[in-house]
Length: 247
Image 1: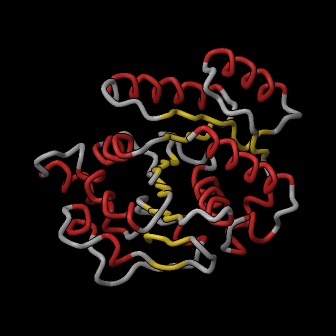
Image 2: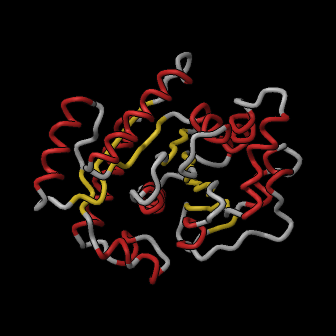
Image 3: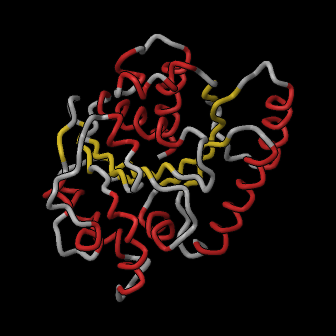
């Protein structure tokens, strides 16, 4: 089973929109896919209209006292299941700090999933904390959306420094891509050019800024499922193919 983390330390960059559409695209390609919504805000769960079970307790789940698979729910789409988020997931860091091997806890929890799924997609919260380190240690690839602005460029630098310092012994694929791009803006064009020169790992596919992506909150479904012919949807499909090739 491959594990892909949708991760950025900056919010509002299109991370969840990517996670939702990537998971959907992979499922449509026949891969048994699980989307794990580990962000307490639960945006991915919202898009798929899935609410967490009452019995799901964040502390017990991360401590391994509740089997993760017991709380996985089917989506409305073939090959795609969801672990819905719950507000109690905000306590994950406290549980991890008490674990014997705090950086390996999530990796251990994900191991049994390999019998059921081909791919796990983690929608990670935009933080730098112990949960973030767990996610990064458990993944085969870190896919990070970057809006081409100076502020996003700065946070990308912070993230790469963090990865070099904390993942020195384990190196998952780092796959940044440009998100919410407005190509008519010179700032966006110039920033993309500069960042590609600085970070050769940038994927070729660009996700344009689109009101169609914003309307996902109204349809509560992946853009690829509702408006697959739109430029943004086609870009998400192309991005998914590029990431799968990299894996």
